[in-house]
Length: 358
Image (cartoon, rainbow, N blue to C red; front, top):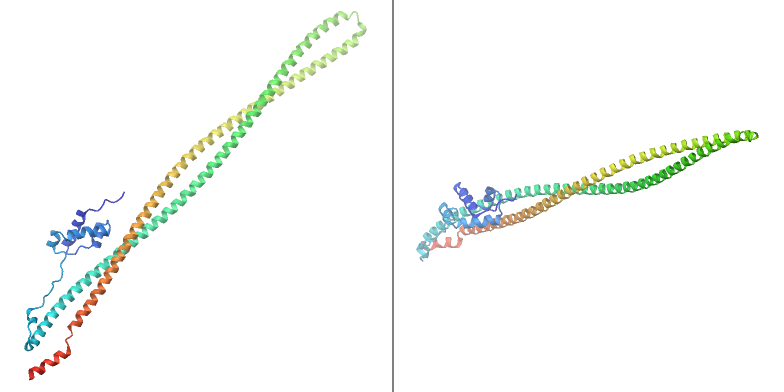
């Protein structure tokens, strides 16, 4: 969740608290105290507080007093040159002392600001390192999620291929089962035909037996032939019985094969249903992986945006530090100018005692 926007009232309250502790409010110590906001926003609200009556009552911006030259320096007279020089030198010394103190205070304040800027820079550098570590971790998580996504896609493709193969096997088994059922129907038809022929043979045997009994008396010479015919009849009956048994055995074999094929078909159907369930689970898992990938992408973009903001603030602090160093160098140059003004002119100092002697 993003931090609330910094308000002018919060900055003014922090300025009053720092001033009450005997410190002069600055953008850097306000940032340390508040813990949020940009230097631009804090500087704008600090300027409005410095212009307020509260800041004037607390003396937040106390500046060094400007010393005016005394009126004695406007008088001319050779007799008062030494006195004027002494007074001017004393005034110059006082002014130089004041300027020295002001320069020292400015230098201390500048050093303090530079130290604060350095501390702020270190804090920002640490924040940048933390953000870079977070970006690295997010990139690693993103790579892992992408790898898992690719692996899930591969597994999904393999499952689809296996499903297609099982569907083909199922179609083949259905075709084989249809062929077996057709053959079984044909065998059952042949069995019915054989049974009908056997009944007809029995009927024919009964008729022949009756005729043979009637003809025994008439054709005694044909007994041997009748016996042979009877043996052939027995052989035929045995052959028919064996054929029937063989057909029954074949039918039972076909029944067992049909049962086995039905069992195999049920097993394949169950495997197909299990694969469909696994496929749905993989699709759900893949959808979850895609959502996680989108979340990680959003976090990665947010971290990059925060890193850009911190880098921008860091550049602004670096510029402020450079400007402060330039001000210190300028103040040191002014101090050297004031020091050069302290030295008296040697020609005028030697000339005045000679006039007094005359």
